[in-house]
Structure formats: C-alpha cells, structure tokens
Length: 248
Image (cartoon, rainbow, N blue to C red; front, side, top):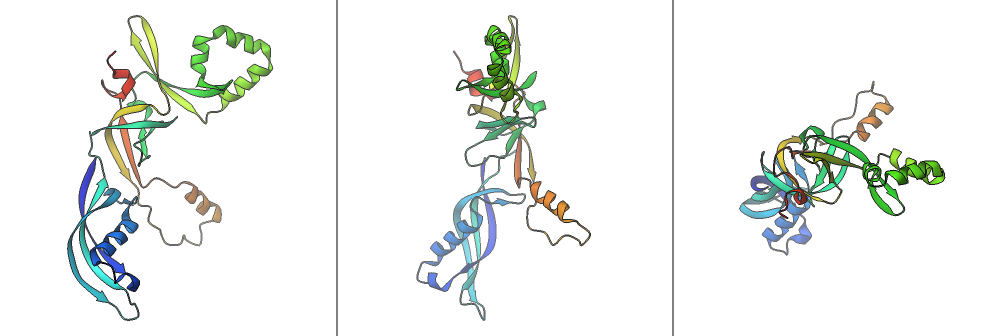
C-alpha cells in the first residue's frame, strides 16, 4: 500500500530561515510542497521519509534565498495491482460503490465488479429512520398499502424514494432456502482487491484558443477529474463487507 519513492528537487530556503538547521528547513519545505498531493504516475504523497543527499546551495542575483538540490525519499500511497485493502463505504451510485480508506477517497468498485447478482436501491428517511425502499416493501407490505391509501404520508414517502441522492447496492445472495439481500450500507467496512488505477494530469494548461466559447470553458472546469483513482473488485469469495464473512 505504501512505497518509498526516490525523488530529486531544488528547494528554496528564505533568508529568515538561515538560522535554522538546513535539513529541518528543507524537510519542512518538501512537506509543504508534496504532502497530500498526487504526483502523476507516482501516487499520493504522504510525508518525507529521509534526505539522502544535499548538493551545494546557491544564492542567485536579486534573490536572497538559497537554492539547494536535494535527493530524498518520500512515503507514497500507491497500492500495487491485486493488493487487498480494507476501507469504508462512502456512498453508492450508478457508478458503483465509492470507498474511502480515511486519507484517500477516490476508490470506486464498479457494478460489474460487485458480488453478483447486485441491484441498486434508493435510500429513504421516513419517521427518523433511514433504510432502503426494498427493506420497507419486504418488512412492512401492509404498511405500504395503508400509506398508499393514507395520502399525505405516502406522498412524503414517495418523494423520498424518488430522490436518488442516497442509494445502496444490494447483493442478492442465492441459497437453497431462497435469496437473501445483503446490503452494502454506508459506513460499513469492506474488503476489496485493487484491479486498476488511473492517473489524470491536472496540471494547468495554456489559455484556450480564441474559437473556444466561454460556455465550453465552464463545462471543462465542471468536469474536473480526480488526479488519482483506484478501481476495486469484490467479485470473489472472501471479498465484500467484513460482516458477510464473519464466523458466527
């Protein structure tokens, strides 16, 4: 999950930091620049591990700061393919199950990589109780019928169901006794395999051509992609919610 990456950079140290030890000032500047940042094709930088070499420092005309070429090793979050990780379900959508490992949220398990067969149901909040519409239909079919005849309460329930902002994926697990719905609830711990990764170069680009309209530029801003995304899978035994595989 974490790797040590050898890097090289030129670090600028302002004059008012000359009274400090050079290594301490450089370590602080490197962490300011890299910590919690994604380096293209490298991964998510976490923290400085050590400094392996300092070359000569230079002060250039017109700039009182020192400039030092530094060789260092940095701790980077970059899971290898087929690595097994454990995270928490952050949300569910048509794109799949979105997972977080606490410090990194751009993990998605697409629908085709879930335990099959799987279906997506909307989550609703009704009388201060959050559940899925499928659960209500299964547990209280008579109540649904009464609400339908009741008018106002059913309209309130219907409005909640039509809101697809919150949803939940369900694994319809088949047994000899019939199908059992296993819900992938938000906040549950989930074990998954890393099957793919995507890096997107989000560095600033030059100004768009004169022919490009303002509306097109606005659309590009709105379609920002995450610089680093992991794709997971739980479509094999032992993977999925930890509660599914807990020995009773």
